[in-house]
Length: 218
Image 1 (tube, rainbow, N blue to C red):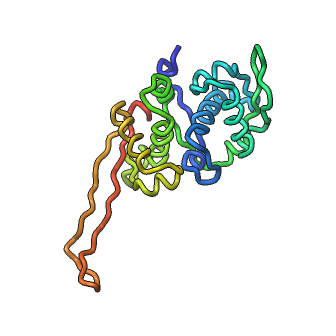
Image 2: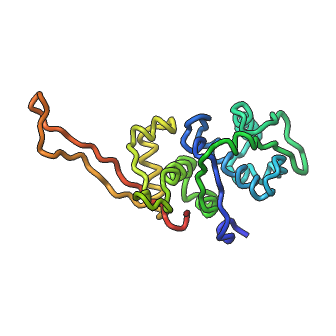
Image 3: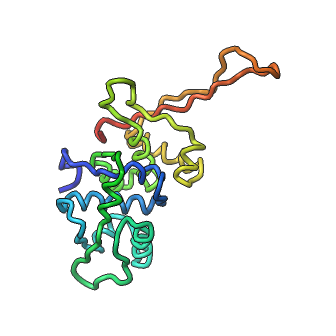
């Protein structure tokens, strides 16, 4: 059964991790951590997550064990998992110890439908687009009754700096997400209100684009 068949399932990730606010993850590492968060949930929040590493490698599109171990140990160095991985079993499963304290210490979580995993698995989005849609979702609250928070507005420069990627990667990720119909973008261009500053120059107001995440991911 695909994750998309389980319509009520979600993956829940601490918002600070989604936004690189405290622990800085590459997009590759973020995809791995997102999957571990989901496996933690499936395992009834038992911190000892039993995994088939070959299956996880296929899901993460990793072809060699060195890359897999390096990525796991990046999570270990940050403290997101508690056991260092030096060797992999030749057969059977292995156990990763999920850091529940870091996971539960964040006051805010970003929740996404597990359908997002199918878009990743089917090569409709890469690791940049995967992370970026989580970032947009982290700023959206459809239940806010006081103000409209149905969209995220963020500039390319800020997003590139926060996720430590180039602006061209931000743009390419947006193209993937739009093609997969996972986001809609309402463009807001640079404009002015007719006022001038002390140097007799027009005062421009910069409006960032509004990003709406598809309903199926909420």
